[in-house]
Length: 88
Image (cartoon, rainbow, N blue to C red; front, side, top):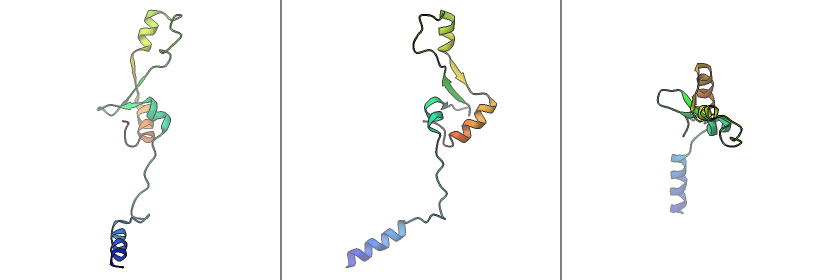
């Protein structure tokens, strides 16, 4: 009986009420897969169209598609809402 009372007391100490904690914000799955946050607060991504069907593309075009793309001001403000905890 003593063991059960002790378990009840410890569970009460560690229980959390819904009013005390704010709900966690969910990160947008698509943005999480495509964008990475960097130290300056903006985001970077890879350009699309660089993986396959490259025989038809010129060398300059393939080189440009291989470069990193960065978010502009309007994208950054929206991405901060979509990824509230940054990106991994």
